[in-house]
Structure formats: structure tokens, C-alpha cells
Length: 276
Length: 249
Ligand SMILES: Nc1ncnc2c1ncn2[C@@H]1O[C@H](COP(=O)(O)OP(=O)(O)OP(=O)(O)O)[C@@H](O)[C@H]1O
Ligand SMILES: Nc1ncnc2c1ncn2[C@@H]1O[C@H](COP(=O)(O)OP(=O)(O)O)[C@@H](O)[C@H]1O
Ligand SMILES: [Mg+2]
Ligand SMILES: [Mg+2]
Ligand SMILES: [Zn+2]
Image 1 (cartoon, rainbow over the protein chains, first blue to last red):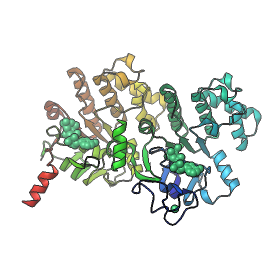
Image 2 (image 1 turned 90 degrees about the vertical axis):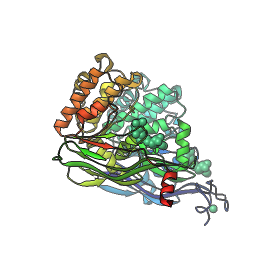
Image 3 (image 1 turned 180 degrees about the horizontal axis):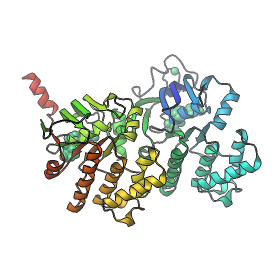
Image 4 (image 1 turned 135 degrees about the horizontal axis):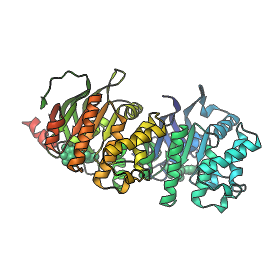
């Protein structure tokens, strides 16, 4: 099996930080705010690996550091410490030591990100098709006809009516915006995809269509995915393995069915019991 | 207690030694013992039946082997297709996922499947995941659903709203088409009528002849009689208090 990503001891502190930050925060301390300096320890000591085609779930309540961890890996945030190695085509990339241009290259070609808020993932000033073309232009495809064709087939794949290819995203429903975002993220067939609460706030039937789309893609192009959600149903459906986060720390990890049916940590037991 | 009804002449696929499972419920400050002192073996082309009163931990043994539960004690030694032996209780999660995909299948008491997917697709899915083409996998799935007497008009529907017996047949078909090396079965015929039960028995016997090793819980003693080469009886586990009294005495 091929490893795609190896994350070691990833930490992110918002604020100036001090020597007490890590000791005085976390699940035991029942806070992620350092009492000495007031910094937010959004993520600390997050480690995991990810294999080709695998879906890893990250669950935990709001503010536990799920999005922060993923944003660091997608270069939206700069981590405070830790390392992440991305394995691609026989090459290894030490993500946090790359320069900005190299990072942009990876995030535009080899990674995909789908945000909870479509405003973060889409350019609302250009059409749905234009959004995909924009991403493709940053990658290796540059022939206009080829780009238009890829955009149209991806939107079709995501069940966005082809007739709407030239419409602006603001004229779309929330579920459709999410599907355009997914189509855009996938346009380069990235080996690694981050999905941050992509179904939160959508109707159940729309959620269902989006989850179907994600699962089909995973089977077709074997993209490895990190799926962030606080919805245990989504986790059970999608993820083979799951991490549970609280106050910036991974407090439990395991096979998804095991985490849900035989949770080890008091917090996870409470979380699972309250979701039943 | 283990009875061997037939001499063991077949390679051993699974050896469970000193297995125990207890649940530590933090919120309630409780420890619930669920299985204790479990010793069993499962052989290629043979069926080992787990028997015992309700609450003796039969399902918990199967879930511990499949790693839906984390075993608390003991070893779960599995001999893989490639000949290596691995302790499933301690194996790396990726390794477990790979074995679930390629070699070990579990017919659980309740069907956990993707919603909104047609039954025939769900049955075909284990084959598709192993690289069989969609059309071949769907053909095999339909064939198995037909053999298990699931009415044809249900094949293209999701089993979410099926009756207990219909769900059970979808669940069984998934594992039967996959022809795993080790098959775990938790009361696979509990909701089936006698005719369908007979069909299932016939299919399970075919799998046995094919060489599949099986560990099964049957609610009906007659099925144990008919299907099992080996029988393992579990006792209701002793509570923590009972165990403490014993050590003090
Ligand atoms: N996930 C769990 N969390 C807490 N306790 C559990 C869990 N699963 C099983 N138990 C407990 O473990 C014990 C054994 O349960 P198990 O389901 O393995 O019994 P069984 O022999 O299969 O019973 P039955 O014949 O009724 O199916 C019971 O006391 C049960 O309540
Ligand atoms: N840009 C930021 N500045 C300061 N604090 C932040 C920032 N982004 C996130 N945080 C804080 O970091 C913690 C983790 O946030 P986040 O990763 O968004 O959590 P989750 O995605 O699990 O809900 C929270 O306490 C949040 O308020
Ligand atoms: Mg978030
Ligand atoms: Mg049971
Ligand atoms: Zn501090």
C-alpha cells in the first residue's frame, strides 16, 4: 500500500505563545486557551498517516482544531511546529519547508480543498465553468477547448446542469455551490483531497447527493481524503479510520466502527452516546 | 469447553487464545465484562459454532476478531492467505482494513450499509473493491440474490426499508459472493423462514466445500448440529465483584 501523507506532531498556536502553552491546555486542562499568555492552542501534537484511496475522518466538537489541522496541510495557515510529508509519484515533499511557489504548485495541482463555506472555495465573480478553468489554468492544461470540455464533464459528473456552466455561483443553491466546489477541487484529479464540513447545514437529500458524489470519486480515482465533520453518520459512511479531537489534541483514533461501537475515551463515549 | 465432532485434518485459519473483552464505561464508572477465557480454533473448510446463553459474549467474540471491539486480553492469531500469522488483537489498523477487504468477512446481526444504494450494488461492492469489473460483480450479485430467493423487484432498491428477513439476505449475499478466507456469522438465519434457511444452509455448505473457514453463532441448535464440525461453549462472564471475591478468598 502506498502512503500519501505522514503528519507528525503538528501544532498551531494563535497568539504569541509561551512556555506554558502546551502544558496548561488540552483535554485535561479543559481549555485550549493558555492561562499564562492567552494564546489559543488550536492544534497540538497531531500525528497520523494516510494511504492511497483511504478516507480518514476527523471528528470532534466545534473549536477542537479540526479545520486548523487541515488548513495547515493545505497551506491556508502556517503551523507553529511539526512536519508533514507528502508522497507523490515517487517523490517526497516536506510540506512545511517548501517555499511559497512550491506550496502553491502543490495546492493547485496535487491537493484539493472543499470548504464548508463556498465563498472560501469559489470565486464568486466568475462563472461555475470559469472557476474550474481558473484552477486548470494554474495546472498543466492550457488549451482552451480542453479546459472547457473538462469543466463541462466535471460539472455534469457533479450533477450541475451543463446549461448553468456560464452562470455565476451566487445564482446557485447551497448544495449546488458545494458540488461546483467539489468539481473544481477535483478538476486536476488530485491524489489528496480535504473536505471540511462539506455537508453541514445542507438538507438531508442534498447531503445524500454530495456524499454519493464523494464516494463515487473515491472509488473511481482513488483519491485519499481527509473528511472533517462533527456528524457521526457521515463519518460512519465515509471513513475507514477516524481521529477524535478535543481542545486541539487527538484523544482517540482507530477503525471507525471501533471508535463508534467501542470508544475508549470518556469524551468519545459521551459524544457517541449523545448522537444515538 | 470444546467438542471436536470430526478429527482435525484441515489447516487452522484462526486460533483465539485467552480472549477476554470488558467495557470500561467512564461516565457510569462501570466495568462490564462481556467475554472471558475464550479459546477456539477455526479450520479451513470447516465450521466452528459458538454457543452459550444470552449475554455469554458470543457476539463480542466475533466483533473482537473483526476488531469492531478492541480485545481486552488474549491473542487472535490469524493465518493469512500468504501464510503469515498475525495477531488481529494488535495488528495495525491499515492491515486490518486490508484483511477485511481481501480475506475476512462478517455477517453482522444488523445491516450497516450505504443508504440509497441498490441492493444488487451493495452485494457487488466487496467484489468491486477487490477489482472485479462492475458488470461481472453485478452479475454475480444478482445470481446470489436469486439463489437466496430475494424477489427480483427488490434488487434495484435500497435495503433500508426492507423487512428483517430481506435485509438479512442482502447481508448474507454480500459475504457469500465475496468468498472470504474466514467468514464470521452472527445469527445469519434468525429472521428467515424454514425454506430460505435451508437455502442458506446449502450455500454455506458450498462455501465450506470451497474451503472457507467459518465461525458462526446460530440461534437454532438444529443448525449447529447440522453445520458444525466444532462447538465452543461460552459461559456468562463473572462480574468484577465476583472476580474480586474470588481473589480475596
Ligand atoms: N458495545 C458494548 N458496550 C457495552 N457493553 C456491551 C457492548 N457490547 C456488548 N456488551 C455487553 O457484553 C455482554 C455480552 O454481550 P454479547 O452481545 O456479546 O452477548 P451474546 O452472547 O451475543 O448474547 P445474545 O445471545 O443475546 O446475542 C452483555 O452484557 C452486553 O450488554
Ligand atoms: N485565525 C484564528 N485566530 C485565532 N484563533 C483561531 C483562528 N482560527 C481558529 N482559531 C481558534 O482555534 C481553535 C480551533 O478552531 P478550528 O480549527 O476552526 O476548530 P474546528 O474546525 O474543530 O471547529 C478555536 O478555539 C478557534 O477559535
Ligand atoms: Mg471547522
Ligand atoms: Mg449476540
Ligand atoms: Zn501560553
